Length: 99
Image 1 (cartoon, helix red, strand yellow):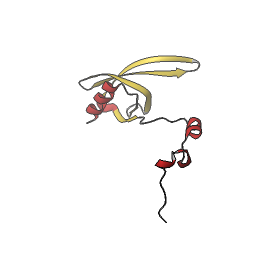
Image 2 (cartoon, rainbow, N blue to C red):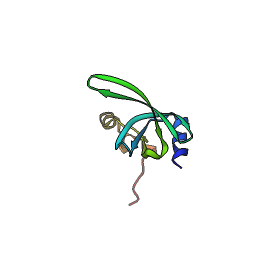
Image 3 (cartoon, rainbow, N blue to C red):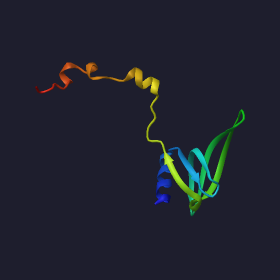
């Protein structure tokens, strides 16, 4: 099942967060670039001090403890400014209370 999920994320080119249980660390915003047998190749960027490093790492499928992916992203400031309320709807689309 994990293999199929990773294959889907690879095809969609969706960034994933991967927990490596044998190393007790997370790899953040990685792209699954290849699945071959029980080997998963991940590509990601990491920041150390003031330098940005790009990595490509191959890990065994059985060392992966968890995989997460972001479903959506919303900016709180933009959301607060652009949030439409019922008063913003055309009058013909507003719901009326039955009373």
